Amino acid sequence: MKKCFFAVMTAALLFGLGACGQEEGKDLESGGDTQMEGTQTEQVSSSQRDGADLEGGSEGTGTSGAGEGDSLSAGGAVSEESLQDEASQALGLAELYQENFSVGIALPNYVFSHIEEYQQVIVDNFNSITCENEMKPDSLLDKKASQADLENTYLHAAVHFDNCMPAVEFALEHDMKMRFHTLVWYSQTPKWFFTEDYTDDGELVGRETMLARMENYIADVLGYFQENYPGLIYAVDVVNEAFDIGNGDENGIRMKDNRWYDTVGDDFYYHAFVFARKYASEDMKLFYNDYGCMYKTELILERLKQAKEEGLIDGIGMQSHLSVSDDIRFNFMLAAKAFCEEGYEVQATELDIGVKESSKAAFRTQGSKYKSFFRVMRNLQEEGWPITNVTVWGLNDALSWRKDEFALMFDEDMEPKPAYLGAMLDESVWDE
Image (cartoon, rainbow, N blue to C red; front, top):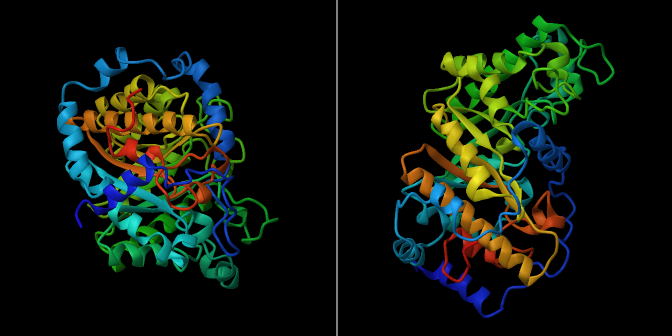
């Protein structure tokens, strides 16, 4: 049974058994989780625009052959022949990269309510889970309970964990770890959390009140998992997407639609790390997570300098919402290495690679990009850089927030695409 999954998947592609997303992605069934990663589509495009101002823009289309990218990323860590041999022996992604980094998957509760359709692929390929939405503030904060006892909850909003329990129980059953996503974010944090009376039209509270609410929220959430599920959470996205030139102040700190900025001020992200370090257990690594990291590397490093010097942060989460035109072997790799050089652990937290059409040619190109991405991350790790996780943001194209871009490794019928074989470093996928 060891090579059964990979052999079947390879055969499905090579002999044309998979549909590879020939139809547009199916809508989720009623009751499925449809609230995806907030405003990410806007953010991907805005981060690309920001790149021209910050670092001279993206380097071309990423379709060049061997050359500068290979010399920068490969480093002679392992031979291509040994990679292919190891890939052919691996059951799936988690086993292939077990000596390098964990391989994660972001899942909505819809998957757990239809788990018989997805379980085998999940357990064969992944050893880490991120909740797509169910650990975000709007899922954990309890509005009714907070309003019902305002005298006691004014500085200490109520929380509940019902929504994330399916993921927690699945992870425990299959001996998987979890990334917590996310504590402090401008999006998917309800307005009522910032108001005097916990209503959507209430007056915003002041700085000290909101700092107290932030601290108590972080203490409650991290404390809950430490007490009830010790060792389950290995990484925490403490702050998500705090820096944005186009939507930020003169220092690049996001102002637009950001009530953390409105109530606490431009140092809200720093205080989040202060509180997270105070309440996190020693086995929880603390991360700053953001999109477009290869276009704002210096901005992120500068803004996090104080938190890093004070030992409040462990790593950078590079979201990795990419397209086939992005330069992985050069721009992305250099950004990851820059973070590592400053002493950060690096995780690719939200990987998907979009294409513009559903065609065999497009999927072949996408497969090469996935192959390039995983090989770059593996080579960096084998060169000694602290690359500790790659998490794919979604299970198949129909369940993806980028369903119109067919950005994932499996199609709507859970048939593997060339993207999967590329991630497995299979020789059937050509090198870009």
